[in-house]
Structure formats: C-alpha cells, structure tokens
Length: 610
Ligand code: F6R
Image (cartoon, rainbow, N blue to C red; front, top):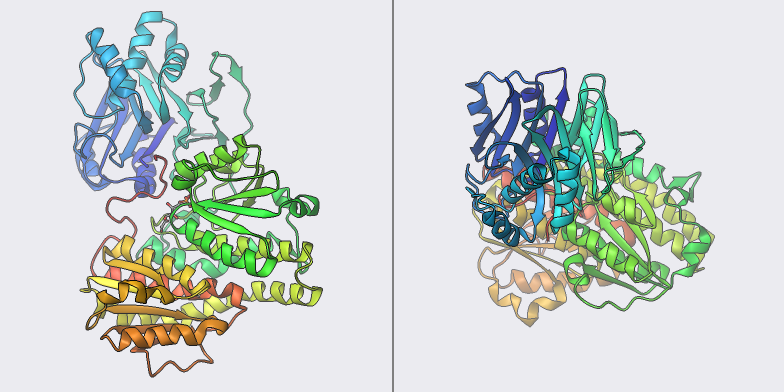
C-alpha cells in the first residue's frame, strides 16, 4: 500500500514525480505529496484526496528543481488528511522522507525521541522515521549512510523509504525491508519507485534493492550499501514489459483494457510453458525429479489469487490425484500447518509483494519445505525468495481488481496439474496431448466470449445498478469461480454479494432470497450440471432473478431470466471461460453506477501490510 517515487537527474522533477504517482495511485489514493529541492531548500507540497488535488496546488507553484521524492498514501496510521500525508519532515527540516510500510515500534520510538525534545505534528508512524534519522545524523555526525543504517537497526516493521537531507540536496537516499522498491537508471537520471509502471516510460533498466540495504541516488549513478556501510555491487536488469502495457490506450478504464488483453497475455504465458506440445518447466527450475518428490501440495494466497488456489485444489486432486490444501495466507502464517519434506508450498501472487503471502512463504521455508511461487512481477520479493518461480506473463496490471493476472495464474495451474498428472502416471499420452491442445485453445475461446458477449452484458448490466445484494452459486469448479465473480462485483461496485456452493444454500442462505434477488448460477460442469440447475430452480421459485452462465449445448431457458452462453472446453479449464462474463458483469454494473472502477474505495493494489 502507498506508492513512492523519486527522481534525480537533468529534467524537471515535478513532472516525472506526478507522472509516476499517477501510475501508482492504484496503491493508495487518499492523499499525496512531493518534496523537491529548490534554491538550497527542500520544498514540501501535500494535498488530501486524489492526485488531482496535489496537481492543482502544484500548478500555482513554479518548481523547477531536478531532484525530488513523492508519495501517494493509503492510510494506516492517522486519518487521511494533509497533515498525515507524506513527505514528512524532521523537526528542523534536516530530513524529509516518504515511506511505504508500517513501523511497528513507532510509539516506543516517539517516547524515546520526545525525551530528546522532538515534537510530533502528525498521527503517522512515518514521522518518527524522519526524526530518528535526524537524531542519529546529528548525534554521530557520520553522514546519511550511518544515520539510515542505525535507524534500520532500531526500527521494527516494513518499509521502503526515500530520504532527502537538507545538507545533501543533490542526492536521494533509499532503504527497504519487506516493502517493494525498484531503482532505475538512464542517461537522464536515476529513479526510484514502488513498482515498475511508475518509471517504465523513462527506463527499463532497474536494480533490485534487497532487505536492509540502502542506496544513494545521484544524477548519474546509484551506489548500494549493506548494513555495515560497505559498498555492494548490483546488476542492472532489463524489464521486458512494453511501455504501452501501462497506458490505457484509448480504453475508458484499465480494468476493461486488461479484460481485453486476456487472450494475448494468456497466449504469452502458455508459450512460455509449452514448447512443441510438451510442457517444459525448466524456466521455473522444476525438473521431473523435483516434481516426483512432492506427494502433497499446499497452496497459499490472498483474495483472487486464493480463488485460483481453490480452482487448483479441485484440479490437482482430480486430475493429478495429489492431496492438495489451499489456505488464505493471513491464516496460514498464524496456524501451525502440518508440512513435511514432501510438501510443495505454492504461493500465488500477482504483485509478489503481498505481506501475508510473503510471510507464508518464509514460514514454509523456515520449516525446510520447498516453495514454488506463481508470480507476475519479475524481481518481486516472493519471486526472489521462493525456491522455484513460475512467472505469469500478464504484464503490468494497473486496475485494482485483478483480471488478466488471475487468468494467467489459472494457466500456470493447468500446466502444472497436467505435468504432475503425466509424471505421476495418472493420465496417458493421448489425454496429455488432448489437455495441451485444449489449453492452447483457451485464448481463442476467450476472444469469442469477448467478441460475442461484451455488448450483451453491457446492456443488461445497467438494470442491476440499484440492487443491494447478489448471490453467485455453482458446484465444484463452478463454485470456485463463483467466489471470484462475487469478489469482482463487490469490490468495485460496493454491492453486497456472496458466493455459495449451490448445495449449501439450503443450509441457511436461501432464506435471503426474495423477489428479484439477483442470483448468478454457473453451470459448466457436466457431472453436476443437473444438481446445479435444481438449486437454481429452487431460488427461482422463491422469486430470484436468475442469470445462468452455461455452455452452448445446454438449454436453461426454463430457469434463466438471462442466459450467458460460453464455448465448451475441458472440464478442468472452464474457470478460464466462465470468469470472463463474470468480470464483465462486475465491470459494467460498476460503470453504470458511475463509480471509479480502477480505484475502488479503501483498496490498494498491492497489500504490503498485514
Ligand atoms: C481482487 C484482487 C485481490 C488480490 C489480492 C492478492 O481483485 O486483486 O484480491 O488478488 O490482494 O494480491 P497478489 O496477487 O498481488 O498477492
């Protein structure tokens, strides 16, 4: 949560900072601020609310400094107002900083600093950092590295910080632990950001700074230091993402652009895992020997990625016959899960920075268990710390509600399950080939759905803009995808919605069904189709307005008020197709309510705090 940026170079910093912040707004958007060097002073400008408010304020100023830092906030400590907005400044203005993360022992540190006559103006945990760095800077008089390193040793929690010192106005100092940060470099200067899209327009060359390291960004170079203050060498990495992938390119919202990108990014992900009709997982460092050694799987993730995990549980167990358990990361880390040396813990994450998923990964590693990350962001913490990494190639996902990352994660699961089924001799060659062919058909089938259903869904969605509740039901994989459909609707439209395994409705929830309650039924699974339809008839006869998502060979006209027909595919891969209309329903209902689809209230794209 929160986004930070920085620039030190030959260009006007304010433009680059604002552009970067606009691309990071998905990480938080309740206030924003920047600090820029100006005539031997560091000027700080902040505003409550969206970035637009900050831009308005900045229009009235003439800031032509070429070195500065910026922040967009998702409030954790202290209400979203201008005082609590970043940057924060130490008592006499020596230190100015922006921070993403949480300082857990900030109260104790405030008390310590108050004894040294520091006073605090905000309710944030960040202000303490500015003053603590200032305290060590003045006490030991050994310069920025020493002050930052002493601060890192003294604080607990997670942070990515960018710091400007009044005495070193042509430098930006950064440090991190457990919160994301990348550092970029090109001929026009050096850059820092919480995430790649913020600087992709300027450079594709980035350094990854590790936990408890700090760095100094000058106009033309970056120097890295470890906790002892010794210099460390880093490699410059090239980001493969297209600049255009982080732009709206004529679409009204990132979410609809990303929905439409799915055939393409899924194809890319398939092409990185299947060569000449054979699955090859060498890119993930996974060989047959490794795969054979796992006799149970533990999938850990949050939100939509957890829903991929639920789909995966059905597929791994049914297709590959491997006992699989899926768990929400924030629960996993505080339980005492039973893992053994033959367990593979799979962490699924778009950002690769989700705090709970990262902690779960570390928990598993501490127990000596092998970990596989299915991750979208290259170089993210989860990708760097896992034993094996399977990258999804969704490209930058900007809309807060995930769509294309979700779909590429499903592909990674299908491929892994098919390979495990083959290695463990649960399927013959013929079926293996059939599965591979069908995985390769998925992008085309999604394209058919997008071409044939977008307009229909757009039209009928407006009639649901005033509803208060919706229920998504299905069985098996249809239930798993109901969970995702329900989340897609509620998180962006603020309509209350729930997903249920259809067979569970009669155990309580059916009492909520009354005239015109919206129920979306997903019925793609042949073996349980009739049972799902019976459940839909039950809700219909209690007054529900029923939308059925099913395949072309089924006639649901007797039960459905509206029908959404999707192409047929192998039963294991149906989530990839049924999720598309569900994404479109969530999107278009939200658009018809006039809400900000890409930046729903209270949410941030990357949840880097617990
Ligand atoms: C919902 C959504 C979230 C994320 C969750 C995990 O649309 O995007 O539920 O799936 O916050 O994030 P990652 O995948 O980055 O770990």
